[in-house]
Length: 126
Image (tube, rainbow, N blue to C red):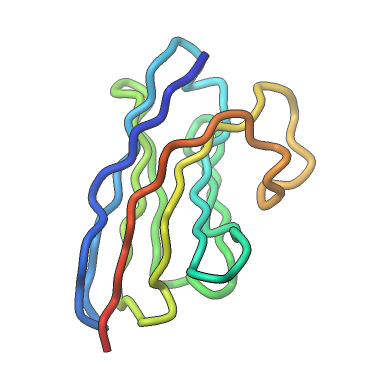
């Protein structure tokens, strides 16, 4: 069992930055790919970023590439999402997710992720 708790959301002006953090419980954190997804009002949840088990590989949605950076600390069981140059269209609830320990087929596919946090709200004003 893995529990995920996100923090760091809030209200920021366009062009600003926020750093989201996700604290994970359990002993299997380093064995799991970790991801961030988001869901804007009235829209489906979408992939934002993912990071490999070691942290050596990262993956991003085209909409955030170059602005967001995902990182992890396996010693502290945390994964973070640094968000720069925020835009109003980045407004959403952001969710941390832990993938199944088995080999992934696609980092961006929700079904690959076994555990989800409750989400943290990010609002970007224009």
